[in-house]
Length: 331
Ligand code: AHG
Ligand code: MN
Ligand code: MN
Image (cartoon, rainbow, N blue to C red; front, side):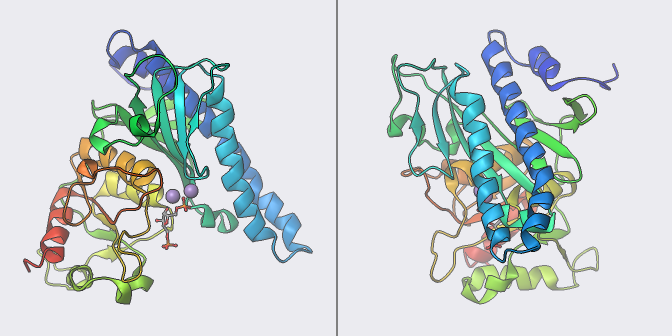
């Protein structure tokens, strides 16, 4: 049967297990928040143009404003939804546990509301990354111990990427599916069904400006990628957008590896475990890829704090395994 015209809502209704009406609703609400963020991002250029006419700091302020706006959009959509009982965000120091006077649902949501927000000023891609857990505890609000969990406990995860089009990619453990926002009707339509990433790619994404802060293994791996003696006869191509969600999206469709390694002064790297690394790791693993700290699978990393950081190596499984062999000194 042709899948043309399958909406996100219909797809989830048809593919998720019985009793998952609230899950379909949850994904629908994430889609709605994504539409609100996409709407705000489309205005960012106008704000910047106004700022450039007289203000020097306006670009920095605009970026901050959009981080906050994106976070506010997600909170507004979810706090009265009756679908979640806890929300953790990059933009909020502490989790929001829904109080007794708001309806609580059984899901817990973690997100990076605007990923790659330095791209706002230059019209480049951005994303929203989300991780969904289920609260199985007793009635009432959950606690940090319920929310701050290993990646293996996610029930669903994904991202929305705001690029030349807006695309919502998610997994609930039954493959990875992408839905492109059709702007004329405001609906997400199935555009990428059951995404499987190549076992090996020919692209790497890294902020190589940090090369001299990396460990020897990371440096040697990237040196290796640049050598031309591959079976293809060509070195890997470098593609780095400054937006993790966008870089992972490229890898998901075309293969390769993204790395944000440990650095001399940042032994845990830069990226956050709970709302950047874990959700993207679940997506990539569901598509046949891998995500690692260099020594351990991301999804197995013990979570201790909401904003904890982790070195990240993510992408095609053979590329990530090759990177691990360099990091672990086997090369
Ligand atoms: P955020 O905008 O949510 O802070 O995330 C930015 C992240 C990630 O998206 C990107 O790959 C990386 O940080 C960029 O960092 P550098 O500027 O250090 O390369
Ligand atoms: Mn981010
Ligand atoms: Mn962010």
